[in-house]
Length: 286
Image 1 (cartoon, rainbow, N blue to C red):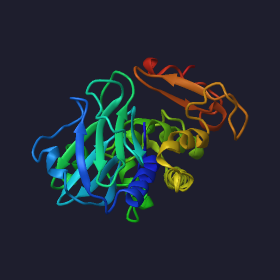
Image 2: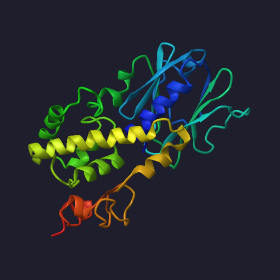
Image 3: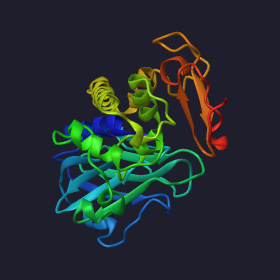
Image 4: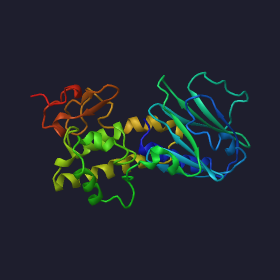
């Protein structure tokens, strides 16, 4: 799933390639992709694109007086093309969900792999009309998100820290991959209760959040949209690396499986050498 660093890189990419261009046509190809009907997609046609904003994992492209809001979900992606095919795409064929064609040629496709279609597109007058944006917590890279604000969020939580970091209504933009990376950098168990952190641990985790995300944003800066997925994977230290050696201590990275996802961690760095039980058991191995 694209997370804050990749979505921020896509925002920069669209600002450089889309801003100032006029939308010629918007073609929805998957019935599930469009989540609004008023204003219609056709209201974007003939309008000039402006700046693109990021709200957590959402992109909001200003087009005329409206906003095209995109959430790529788990398996979605944005593919820029300097020249679009001459033949119009056929609905329901392959991963293509929506195409935006620009005057003068080129544009971008929104695609989604797999059978679980969650990619979402909205046309709104204000991005805050999108429910997912309206409920977002603070952006972890915002200037006003300081250590004390982070501490207040943790103090109000009785959940495990892994789930808190991924909750978009608490902190916007962090998903499964970067929560693993943050907790590894902070040397914290993903099962530790958020409200149990002492002052020093809060500070250490806050610094890990900011540093991990900033470094990922820097790595993604200037990377072409089509290469961002590979760049993200290459920069991960534990997530998706089950069975590989930890780059810090050399212990074997382990995994915990959930119903539809998994987390990765290093026992030596994060859990005092103890392997975590499968999350379905909801406890540590004794």
